[in-house]
Image 1 (cartoon, rainbow, N blue to C red):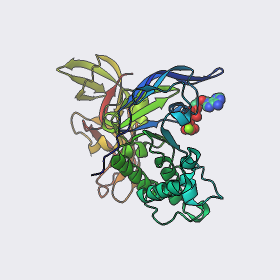
Image 2: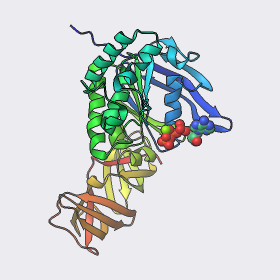
Image 3: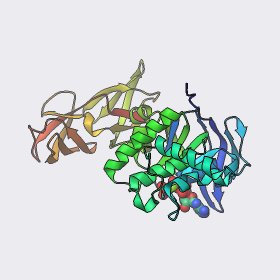
Image 4: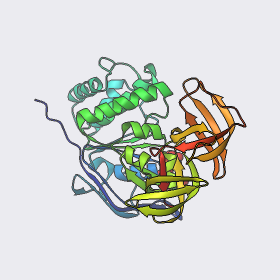
Length: 355
Ligand SMILES: Nc1ncnc2c1ncn2[C@@H]1O[C@H](COP(=O)(O)OP(=O)(O)OP(=O)(O)O)[C@@H](O)[C@H]1O
Ligand SMILES: [Mg+2]
């Protein structure tokens, strides 16, 4: 019976990084469960790569401690941490065969060439490249080169595998299938993975936990569902998929439900620990339903634009609380610009968020 290797826990305590006057990562705490896949998601410059490189040991911390598998690795070099990193550019040696590329790390560690090549061939099988070890990287497609880079990281049997935007050089279709493969590989090997991306759909697809970063800080960490359905703030709500953001007022809270006023509409929504007063209301485009003018308890609106999209229709709608973007499933009953309608907001996809 093959024993599933389980990955190590990664524990960051007060870990931060400054470059002179630039704070790349403010001191933060994060615990990554063994054998889980965690993505660091956020806009350019928010500190994702810096955080990953500190875990890898490629960058020294300015503050805090890093523990991997219960061992304090803060002062250890990259080679002493038992972590491997897959880079965006793959960084393959062009003059070496695929097998030599994969075996390189093992040979540097002192393994005999024949054994290292045998291990490399095993790793190539794991990533679906059986029999391609004799090729040069230039004779491989982008997706295959990506897999060689993964095999090169895996062959070292790391406790933690780190990926920095591994799919950004691939086209959309290949990205989709490669992210499934990475997820599948992670599940089979049970290794802990930390994965950097700025693509929210990639993060939703691969992660056990997503850590959303904004300006050198963690904006929110949680499961994909928590981040999408219960965002802690407007930044997370709008970063995790499309969302309208308008101002409303909580008029009352009772039994965990808030009565939320949006113009003439009074919505009943989960209060999420908020109290009466001004509030941000985040509305997903799919939560907006168009009804005939005069329908009670809704938000009056005028159609600004209407676009037939085949399977659905897209609308921009003017309301007294602002312009809303809506995606409606019934494309056949397309409204026209200037039509008066009433918007009914579904509870799923409509959320109050702390202002
Ligand atoms: N070696 C360095 N010296 C000075 N500043 C740096 C250095 N490396 C990164 N920074 C700064 O630290 C911040 C975070 O950079 P980082 O590369 O971690 O961002 P990122 O989230 O990975 O962005 P991207 O999505 O563009 O890759 C940025 O403001 C960047 O300019
Ligand atoms: Mg980066």
